[in-house]
Length: 431
Image 1 (tube, rainbow, N blue to C red):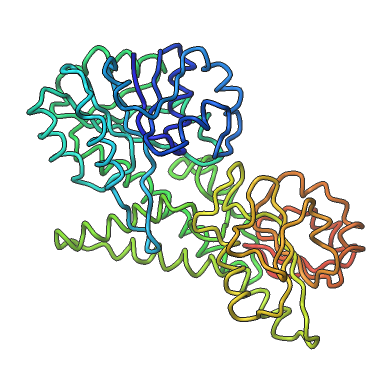
Image 2: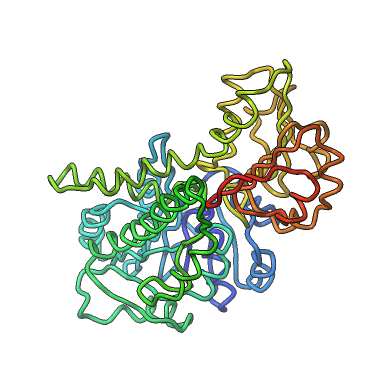
């Protein structure tokens, strides 16, 4: 039997993926109500394919709030998502709390695998302490991506495992779990594995930052980034899967968290990490792009006392309900703080408007068109596919104004412009 301890996003998906492979699995979380809610089928997250995966897993998966149920587990995966503060610094105490809760109940030959997102150097002292009690421990890099977590959990590209001695084979019980997913297994030092996770996000951050830097130039000099990106994808040194779509900076918290970890580690060891600072500055600047556009095109010129803004999409990306560092939330907070009389109407199919943002002047609606009624401007923060099929004529008839801030080019440009809408998108000069 194997176990998963910590049932947030990572733990829920990981436990389902392992159980769907036929492993008898105990999924543990001591927080009140978490295990009971999951056992009743109430999911706190939204992921494409998760319902089907859980349906396959149900005969092998049991949820519990009691650490004592882990006594028979050969391998225990620590999978609690690590929260971050307002500065995107991680609080790893949640991992220590789980270790403290399960340690008295671990079998003498048990194997502990930490998958939670931790800073470099986290596992070594815990590893040494567990080793004194006869418990082996490893660090396994998680590469969960909101919106495609099920795919990445069931069809992993590779496993990266940090261990005491990379030249030695992994324990049979742990190896059987990994080999069930039929992908390469890279073993390395514990510290190397911890830094590998951060290295992946640093490279992603660099691609996002470069793309947004050059797309911003396109918006000013007449170039179109959509024409440039295909040339880059055909370059083998960059590739077809590169992050070449302009966006609203980094969001979701994970990449920002790892950049902060690099800055903290560099400060500790006296190394240079100015590139990470630059990526974070670029992200913050780009996140405010819709607000800059709105100020330049509407708010700075608006004569009437009341203005209504429609927002389509709140989640920071497709396929998730997460609002962590979402540009939409920052946008709404700024408008509520600086223009309290302004009216905001939102819509998102899965991400709810936060309670603290909901007021008489800011409400969520059941459909995209309902949110448009009387709007002076429309801002699209999440490129939900169904938005591309909303009739342009309906958009025009519902709106009072004609400004559409469409960062990701969701609406059909030619049709929208022919209907009199003014479309402003990332990476292309304003029309």
